[in-house]
Length: 65
Image (tube, rainbow, N blue to C red; front, side, top):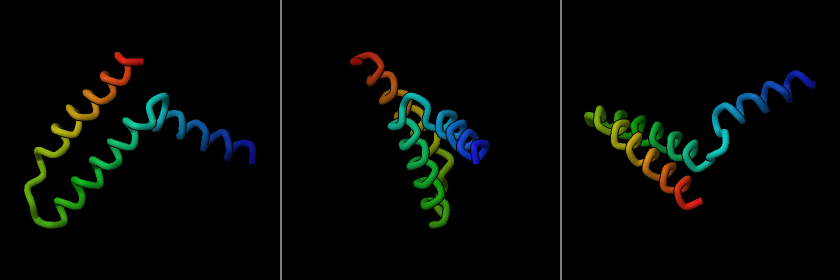
């Protein structure tokens, strides 16, 4: 059981890390891309825009902290 807990903690720290908001925005971006793609919409532009937004939010939080 100890190994399972350690494995879970590793992945939590790897994915979420210090900024849970950035991780949540990335997951929301992937979900939005999948939802739009399911509607037969060209979604090549979603992830570049999402990366710019996540970067802006993350840097803005780091500057004001």
